[in-house]
Amino acid sequence: MSMGPLLTVADTMTCPHGGFVTPVITGNRRFILSGSLALTLGDSAFIAGCPATDADGQPQPCLTVQWVSPASLVIEGVPALTMASSGICLSGNQAPQGPVSIQPAQFRVMAD
Image 1 (cartoon, rainbow, N blue to C red):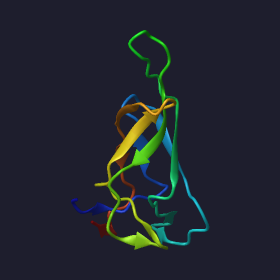
Image 2 (cartoon, rainbow, N blue to C red; image 1 turned 30 degrees about the horizontal axis):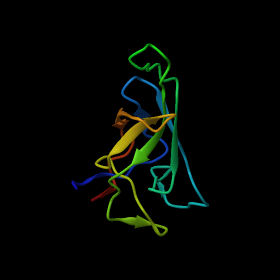
Image 3 (cartoon, rainbow, N blue to C red; image 1 turned 180 degrees about the vertical axis):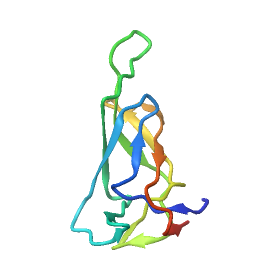
Image 4 (tube, one colour; image 1 turned 90 degrees about the vertical axis):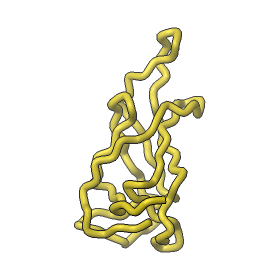
């Protein structure tokens, strides 16, 4: 795993098809970076506006993100997410649709 900035709710994230990823904080988090809550492996991420279709032209939008490479840094008992964390966008039937694209909002706090 390589080092990267910690992710926050202020980061801009999209699916491979341009749908917008919205992180949802789980629990009562107090760890704030540059005015935004830090993200952890325990948080959910939902996708809206994905125009993806399957081979038959039927809608197959990305709906959620599954994080598979959290940082070794733990925030309030849960591994943190960084720019280097791998997020896979999933359709409603859990089919992998590709990686989440991340534009981080802060570069001050890094972890691996």
